[in-house]
Image (cartoon, rainbow, N blue to C red; front, side, top):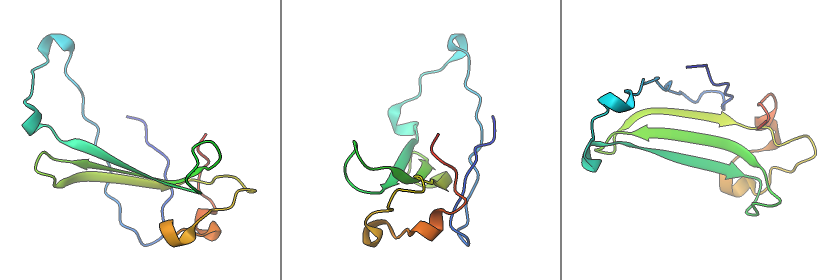
Length: 105
C-alpha cells in the first residue's frame, strides 16, 4: 500500500492505518454485519457551502464491530493562499496551522 502523505497538528499522536489484503472473489466468505467494523470520516471546512468552501482537515477512524478504535489517520489540508479558514470557533484551526500542509489535489 503506498504511503499516504499527511500533515497534522504538532503534539497530536496518530496511529498508522494497516493494509489488509482482500480475498479473491472465489474465496470470499460472507461475514455477518454484526461482525464487520466501519469507518468514520470527518471533514473540517472553511464554511458550510459545498459550492464555495474548501476542506481544511480530513480525519478517518476505523472501528471494530464493538466500536473500539482499530486505527486512525488525519491530515490538515492547505485550501490555498487566498482562502480564509472560516469559522475558527467551530473547527479550532487558524491559518498558521495550515502552513506546510499539502493541498487537496
